[in-house]
Length: 75
Image (cartoon, rainbow, N blue to C red; front, side):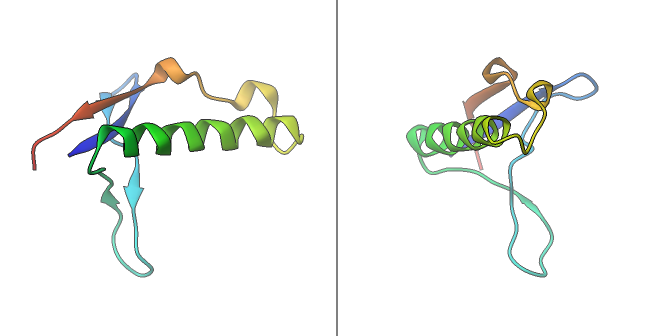
């Protein structure tokens, strides 16, 4: 299993991606392959960049790809 982790000042590297079904508690999201995790991260970063381009988000409210990493985890 693979997960996308985000670097935080207080907690270091954490999995902040969640997979939440309606009415259920948020569960950390994992991916079957590294490629799946890479695609999800790329989609997220592209979505944020598009929001900035459309003026829906301030330019300084984007994310640096260096703040993320993809790691293999054991269940």
